[in-house]
Length: 333
Ligand SMILES: [Zn+2]
Ligand SMILES: [Zn+2]
Image (cartoon, rainbow, N blue to C red):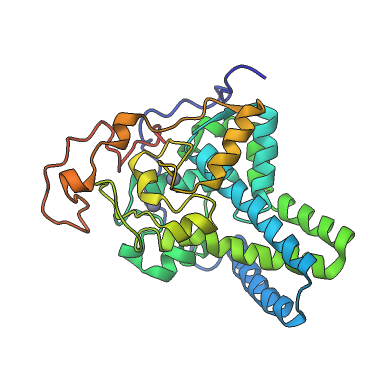
């Protein structure tokens, strides 16, 4: 498998934020939308189903099934939706790109284009009023789930993710992202029956959603800061553990295009270990990692804090590259 996967040139490459997005203010139409109703009812059903599953109890087999479907899909969210579709931190073939995206849809967090495009907005406007889910601006619950359930961010805006929007199969998958969860549920029911569905999908998806959402709600509040990013991102060992490496969030905001978020050997990053193994197998290539000089740049212990929310006074931090590390253009993700 050789070559570099490039999106078909049906959409222009994005070198700067387009005028229409994401700087535009999206004014949702009044009243709930169909997808919002589906999301709210779906999340409610998953929580009720989790309680039912716990009341019914689990065997070791069912618990192992729940753990396995959690881990595989957490990998799909962190290593595929996040590190690949949001930040292009490695390359792969068009076929595997689709299969990985399909795996990502089973996490029931919408499609890869919507997920990646919306996440890019978080990096562009981290902890400002335009951030999609800043707990510092809009509180814990909005950052955790409210933004996901509301109407203001439900639109798919292909201009946010032009590097992948040119693939018709990805646009199809994004539109029909329910095929992943439906297929997974059908398989679990067919092979293992009702309890396999409850533990392998419902309980697992409940944990997966909250696990993923903690990066939005907690990784900007609890943990330590190594790098003087202009946001409030933090490194948190426990969040890294449950999200297979995403908890090194301050590292990530410092250098977001890196395929590894644990920058040092003691920073556990299971997703990256799996990506390295996939690279050895020739499934993916050109994994991007932070250069040595980047690891030593803008350390808080040397330059002080510079997040406006944490240190109102400017410090003697190095002048930022263009675009700033904490405020990249959408083309530099
Ligand atoms: Zn963040
Ligand atoms: Zn990111």
